Length: 198
Length: 199
Image 1: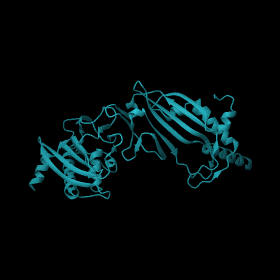
Image 2: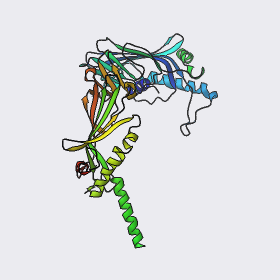
Image 3: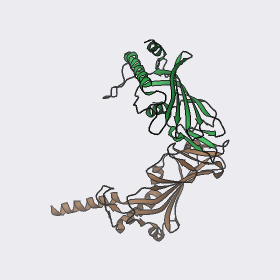
Image 4: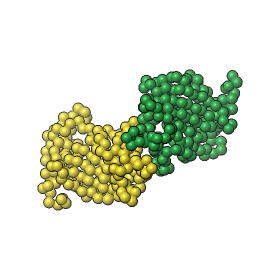
């Protein structure tokens, strides 16, 4: 699972989200606050499910004909998590706060948006060095397939981004998942639309 | 039959002694130096190379160090010279990099060892050199050791070492956490007395 998503899951609150939810691109904006905390604005575009389940005992993956069932199960689990756990205002022990969360449709895709306030930027992998006038993001554990845009320094060879603190916010947009086969992952949009009608 | 048993016991004790003898050091310094051509040179220096006492029970937390005899001391010195300095032990420990040179030297009354590696592109050492923001930074994973930054600042949670580009270096000292240093013996006297060791 992508670190960013795992991170969101772990924060609010501890929940082991084992589904095969993936998304095509992610856009993240960090804004440093005067009190030293950081607002993290995360957008995940085109949420999909790979529809694969593995037998816990054998580790064997499910057959392709069971993909639809697995996708449905992934979606149900995801929605349960969103509705029960991802409620605005929730805080963890460190004082990190979920400011808002929503699912929305854009360009015929299901997307998710979370806004978090983190007390310590290092908890999202950001080192803020006021003496050197920079902030550095360590993306070592993120499954970034390709960097699409950033307003910081990224050389494409080391998973680090450096921003000048003079920037009002630090952002990047990256490709998170690339389908190896056309039907490798299924969009969750139609399931979400059906769910909304219930 | 009794003699065979005695012989086996002696062999087992000897094997145990060899396995437990411990070539160690007090501190390890890692320096990533930015060269004028843009490459990075890694220099690792081990300060105070020592022979640590043998632990008898096999459980490091509850073992008592026993007084070291000369054979253990000589054995550790031999490992240092034959395996590390003249052999390929250092190369085997740092497979990602190519060793350029190795040497032993005396500094402040202790024996030290230095390994220099062939310079590499910054990205091959997980280092980002950012001219625009005048910083250099690297991915840094905390190990089971006490870490003291020398050039740059360590951000433990973010797993980063970050410094000014003007310093042209990121470096830190690593001190292994050992149960105790009682009975530890410096390898300096043996090195000084070794006529074959380059000085």
